[in-house]
Amino acid sequence: MDMETITSRGITVMNVPALIYPIGSDGSFIMQAVTAVWSCRKAVLALLSPAFLWLFFNGQARGDIASGVEESMKRYGDNAEFREYIKSVPLLVPDLRKSFGDRK
Image (cartoon, rainbow, N blue to C red; front, top):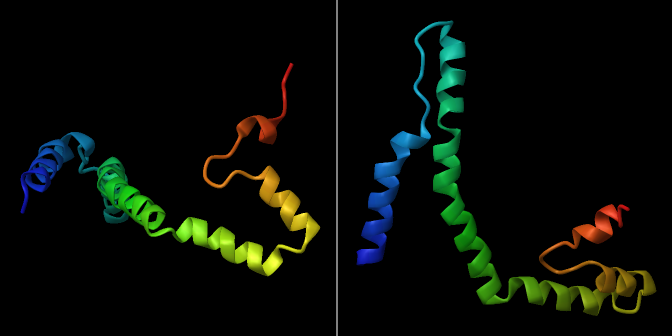
C-alpha cells in the first residue's frame, strides 16, 4: 500500500466516530434498529463519496460519456428534435438559469 492510501484510510477511521450520532436505548427493538441505521447515514455517505468520484472520473477517463454522445449522434443524428436537444442540454453540468428562467 502506498502512503496516500494509508493516510486516507487513517483519516477515515479517525473521523467515523464523529459522523455517527449516539444511539439511545429507549423504545422498541425495531425503533432502535431504525435509529442505529439513521445515526450512521453521514458515515455511509462519507464512505461512499470517494467511490462515486472514482466511478465518475474513471468513466470520464475511459471516454464513456463522450462515446455515448457519439453513438447517439450516429443513431439519432438525422432527427431535428434530437439535434435541438443536444444543443440545448449541457453534457455534464445543467444550466439552472434555463431551468428556472430569469426571475425579476
